[in-house]
Image (cartoon, rainbow, N blue to C red; front, side, top):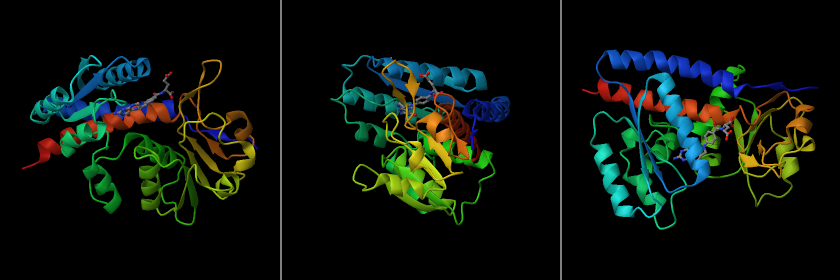
Length: 286
Ligand SMILES: Nc1nc(=O)c2c([nH]1)NC[C@@H]1CN(c3ccc(C(=O)N[C@@H](CCC(=O)O)C(=O)O)cc3)C=[N+]21
């Protein structure tokens, strides 16, 4: 068997096109969507990611404002900038790129963002909304993974077994909640799981979100399963790779997402969707 690829680049392009149309309608009504991106310090990977987000905004007619600060920025100064952006009616989304320098309490910073502008979906109010099924912003990476499942016709996951490997607050946990909301039977596996292979082999839908190259190999995958690779690693040769042994697993899986060109572009597309929705909600409010 050779798995079919789920093309995150193509799907993200479709989504960005829909966002662009709706953004144009917002702009025509006098309120173009606006995203503020805050980057602290000089992490080279963060600079690349932030540049890609700004570029995606430009392509879709979302006004972006990049605020870049040195690694020595004080926490209070950052909190003050967030307060100003919270109060700015032209800004509908606020993204503080992670990781932050160690002297800044990332949790405190995220909680300072107005939940109505939390387009990353990282605020506890967003996490709580997802948990109880209330409207709010969903974290972009797992949200993008759900869109990838929908793109291959998987809307209702009733009767399907989903295994999420990894339990982070920004991917693993919200991913599990979204799969559950779609009626899957969900297992979260992690570093404390015994016989990870056996657990993964149960999965009709396997999501790998750990950050370790070749964590998922062919013998861990049920024939025909959908394998979603959230990993973003550099291998010994400096090449970008996911958590899944793509070549090997492709022989077993029914569907597989590549890295690059899979979940990464979808993450950015869902950031644009959230920003647009924040704008639409802001201007629909009485
Ligand atoms: N507040 C915050 N929000 C984030 O969403 C956030 C963050 N901080 N910190 C870092 C991670 C990482 N992240 C990526 C998004 C897209 C790609 C992406 O588009 N990757 C391309 C390849 C890019 C390349 O070539 O390096 C791909 O997979 O095809 C990668 C990584 C968002 N993050």
